[in-house]
Image (cartoon, rainbow, N blue to C red; front, side, top):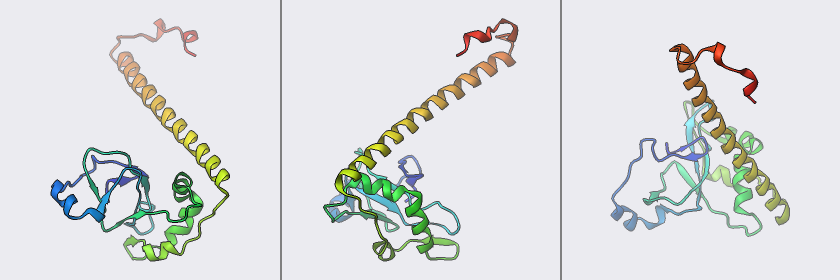
Length: 177
């Protein structure tokens, strides 16, 4: 469950891998590429659960944890891309978090979740909404990469300034755009 963090799958966060024979013996718990999963447990009063991830292709078999649910879409009118973005939306999360039970540990119930309402636009509108969100997701990734590059550049330049490898008087500020 700890591998679902901030709506991403991070297999470097204390993963536990069972022998491949376990996946063979428990096929109904094996997750596949494209499956949508959500973490069901977190801290009461915090928003550290309800993370939804669409699983990428992985080298190893991933198994469903008891505090993670696989979201199977059975209504053919609901598109998976739209559903994923709907489950990540602030509107849905504001409706979801109050359903959690527990004093210190918040636990979502799949039975309570089944009663939640889902907005269902027509198929064309769902596709358009999902396309817009995918475009925004790509822009967020690119902006994050640019931020990381600029932070690296800043650290390098700061180090050069602090060690006097570069002097401010030799920098032409008109060169920066």
